[in-house]
Image (cartoon, rainbow, N blue to C red; front, side, top):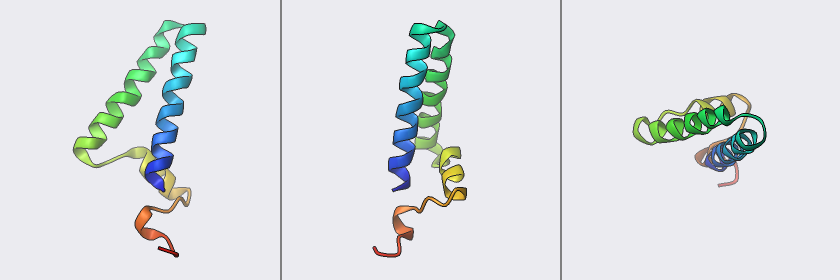
Length: 68
């Protein structure tokens, strides 16, 4: 479940930053790049700040489900 949240948040950030780049300022593309770089580094390091934040907010990981 937590991976679905991370993908949804990353996708939302990318779409919002693209819209902001088109309608506000082209420099918002730096935020798009930042999200992409974070996704790439998390694939190598297996560490994701958003995962830590979501866990602190109470989102359960796939293996932590009470009904699994």
